[in-house]
Length: 216
Ligand code: ADP
Ligand code: MG
Image 1 (cartoon, rainbow, N blue to C red):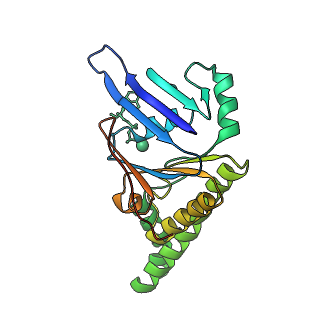
Image 2: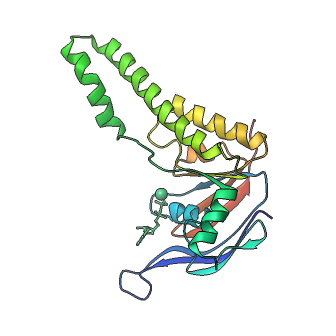
Image 3: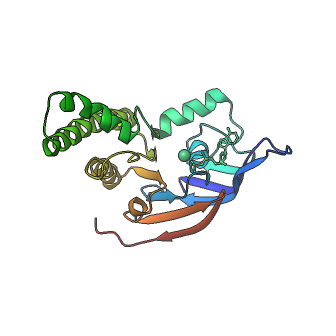
């Protein structure tokens, strides 16, 4: 068992009126070489779970064994050693500008030049695609350069157009086929639907955890 999480809680501002149970009793096992999508709405606890899985944070309560090692009682230095050895991170919102304002920004000089609307659309999409593809590829290259056994990706296709998003998923699939354990965090059901195992999270709890057929 690569990842073994038992009854994990992450509670912010515990005991106060503004207490938030970002994770509210989560148990989860992931084997080496799995491809798992964790899906849930905004605020459901996905990033909190990713931070704990990735040893960026420790649970308030509960057990976490990573590759047989208890990681709930480690010092910051020990945690960073585990991270460096085990995990490649692809973070949410890496260098991204909200899609719409980016589109308008790129379109502006073309409007000034009097470029016709249909050609503008094509040029803007092409330019944005090149840039975000580049950003994402750099983020992914950074994550995989050390050959980590685990890739943790938080919304890696967020704010990307569908074609670029597919490229990113293809890269993750290729890593999986080469034996990397991939954990893909997303709010997007259509992306989760492409994974061989889907874990649904809501209000800090796992509501469903099921395998599904995939055609790859
Ligand atoms: P998601 O990634 O699914 O959008 P998060 O894990 O970021 O969800 O957040 C889960 C819940 O925990 C949310 O209600 C969020 O507001 C809360 N939360 C996250 N981080 C903190 C924090 N540092 N302090 C207080 N509340 C937090
Ligand atoms: Mg998040």
